[in-house]
Amino acid sequence: MGFKRRHRAWAAAPLTLALLAATGCEGTSTSDAGAKPTAAPPSTPVARVCAKPAAGPAKAPAGAVTVDPAVVGDLAAKTKGNPPNTTFWLRPGKHRLDPDRYAQVIPKEGNRYLGAPGAVLDGGKKNQYAFGGTARDVTIRHLTVEGFVAPHDEGVVNHDSADGWVIEHSTIQNNSGAGLMAGSRQRVRANCLRANGQYGMNAYKANGRISALLVEGNEIVGNNTGDWERRRKGCGCTGGIKFWAVNGADVRGNWVHANRGTGLWADTNNNDFRIENNVLEANDGAALIYETSYNAVIRKNTIRKNNWVEGRREAERGDSFPFATVYLSESGGEPRVRARTDKIEIYRNVLENNWSGITLWENADRFCNSPANTSSGDCTLLVRDTDRCARPAIGKPPLYADCRWKTQRVDIHDNRFVLDKSVVKCREKCDRMAVLANYGTYPDWSPYQGVRVAEAITHKQGNRWHDNVYVGPWRFVAYDPSRVLAFGQWQGKRYRQDAGSTLDPRAGG
Image 1 (cartoon, one colour):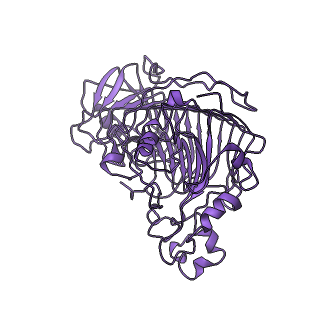
Image 2 (cartoon, helix red, strand yellow; image 1 turned 60 degrees about the vertical axis):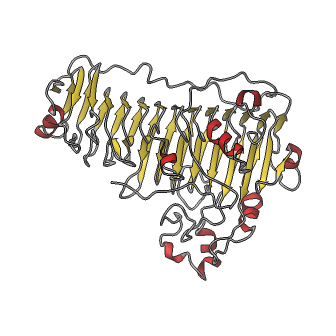
Image 3 (cartoon, one colour; image 1 turned 30 degrees about the vertical axis):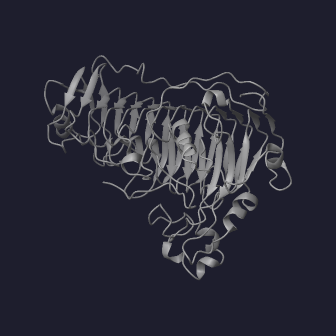
């Protein structure tokens, strides 16, 4: 199993992408100063799952099959020898599979795996996968899964992205690849996803889309120990969690922190996300990237001390791009794509002492059938046949609009943005909000050349900040990276942003 590599989209010549992150560290909140917010959420509870995971049953439930850690391969053998809908109780101790690299547990439909206190399934750095196969509605609870060596882009738990799995109160740590994969109707609750080589979770399905995914109350920390963005420069293949083509996801109440690279990254034709009540903290890169995707609500999150490593590195290299903590790349609201909202709404979040704030970006050279489309052969959700996006049809409606992922209908309001440069330890380029595009140049048949996309994203696509509170020396970027604006210019007749918002530049450093 695998998939084609995707990349973050930076097409303008002066911009660079080099994600050489170092391990983050746990952050703590600093006190707010200055203006009182118009609408800010209460302090978001932190899901401290890894420090004290919930204990599993100390005795085998009635009717359960007991699995003996002293017998190598006992779990896989008893799974094979029992019917569907069997409950397995793993005794305390270290459980091992046969030493073959492909040895794994292949559950049957409806199986349940419950770990006693101290039950560990250990791959011994030999086995690639812990649980695989296509059986639906499998449950894994109270189990530690560690020491597996899944290949790049593959996962250890639910390796084949089967549907309907429930993974709860488990610790999935110190594995290569992704700690777990995801299928439709998957429930991932109250787990510790820690120190996995590439992702905590890779929500990717080789055949078809994932729907109705729930990620709730997990601690997602220290993932991408393999530093894959350095090993495969610009691969866009790391993060606490990566989502691909997920239609309908609720991501709530998680603590996503100290991941090498991005915290949460939704990449390529995701739709209908609700990202709420999370703490996104001290990730080396952006807290959240929403890329070439549609229709989302991002609300009531606490977002602090993110992007210090990647933002600082690019600034020190002289890059003028506003590398942001919340980064929307070719993503927006689209009423024709069915969802619980028809826009991207970002509201009632607190962003505190991150490297910059929110950037809305659109790459003029990235569209269906363009060689600059880093999402391989994918097209928008509005055009099924990528080959239709070619001359002459692409130059006229409806394809002129529908062949391009557009950053549009983004509504940013009632947030609190706090910046103390003495905390972030920066002098410049860490203080920006932005809405911009590059100058279209490629390919030579592109209908989006020149400033067309910059004009559209800045003035014509319904992207709007309003009723926010800014504390600290914030600046604003519009149209292209060279246009750095004061608050009054940002609010003025040309850009008309942040109506009803306030800024106190004296507070916060």
